[in-house]
Amino acid sequence: MSFNIMQKGAIELNAEALSRLRNSSFSVMASKHLEVAAPYEPAFDLESVADSDSDSGVDLFADDDGKSSFSDRSKTHSVSPSRLTEVESETRFAVLSYEQVKRLNDVLTEPMAVYGRGNFPILDIKLCDLIRVVRSKLEADSVTVRDVRLNGGAASHVLASETALPYNDTDLIFNVELSSGRAYDRVKFATLSALLDFLPEGVSKNRMSTCSIKEAYVSKMIKVTEGDRWSLISLGSKSQGKNVELKFVDTMKRQFEFSVDSFQIVLDSFLVFQECAHMPISESFYPTVIGDSVYGDIREALLHLHKRLIATRAPEEIRGGGLLKYCNLLVQDYRPASPKELKQMERYMCSRFFIDFSDIMQQKNKLETYLWNHFRGSDPALVYDYLMILYTVVDESTVCLMGHERRQTLSLIEELGYSIYYGDLNRVFVPQPCVPPQAYYYPQSYYYPAIPSLAPAKAQKEVESQDPTSCSCQCHNSCKTQQCS
Image 1 (tube, helix red, strand yellow):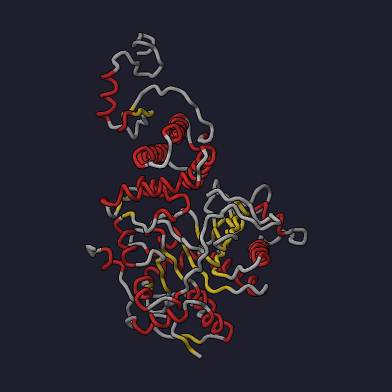
Image 2 (image 1 turned 90 degrees about the vertical axis):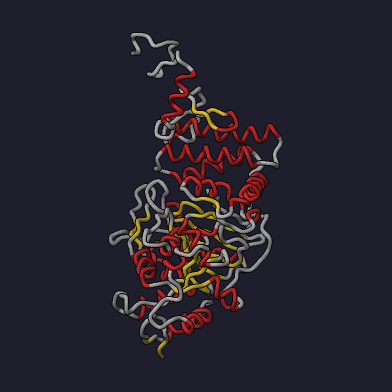
């Protein structure tokens, strides 16, 4: 039997591939799109859209009681395309163009290095191979995989315009059934045993166990059982390369923070194409791949991505409020899509952040972890600028804290800014509370150490003119002596 999974032409599917394609949750929606899509053109054109006007995880798998620290999520079910109305399907989904499918092919077939701790070897893994091995082991252990999706920055990279967006990690979503604690153990075992298959030749696997593989290659594990049901396994080391994060989702109320990170790409048709078509893709021979925006409107989300705009829905529902991610977008020159709603959105995000991280030590750990995960190896000036943006947002938009609690948080951010100024990211967790030799004026009458690449020349001159006795060599002498000149 033949099935049209390409923009042009058809291929013969064997019984196993056909069964997998029929059982995937996107098959109904995919066939619908294939009927309405033009025979030689994708269902949407990114250029026409662009021109329009319009956390550190905790290893919870070892717990015997199965409890999770994530207890504030309400129970809901993930939405599969087959359950959507016709209007929702038209706005949420679109067929990828050839250029986008080509970028997707590059992401999935390019070898990625997964670094191990100690003497464990580096694993060179292609994402498409990793998906197949993990999926086959899950299905062999009676775990139903509804579909597999590419998520996060990698999906935005694929769907972006001609200028491809850089991304830090590669996020994969396996939509599975996690109805019992045993299902979580099967997911964990399938992932760790899959890594054994990617060990280089010559490495003895007889004495290898999943426990040793976990200690060597897993950097983070999270299991959520109350309300939502999902788990995450992060492979690799942040300090040495990109991580591969495998998220196994049964139900999750909130799957995105902002519209620009709401993209998901259904990979089932692409993987079936790879198994059946033993030839590379070309402009006249490539699979039909479906893109999804859980934000709700894929055209609007693509417009935000192209024009670098910040938009979200119900920011109070985002765990942590999305505050740190929001400031990260601001430092990357993103701007709010609706300036009129800016203050209200910031207040919601600040309130949710302080609800989820009410203690100053929790705030410190969260902020330090975020800096480590997202700014490792970045220019210290960029990190400093990020902290100053965060300081301003917290200072101006926090309405749920007592005065002394607010000052504590501001002092924490200020202290981290000092450590960035006096060192680099390797020393960001070792604060150095000392008075800066120069000062740079910011709103709300606060002073911060000035990084030369950030401080405008005009501001530097104003500071020097206000203190004519300061020493230009920053030796803290009361005047410019002959020794300092």
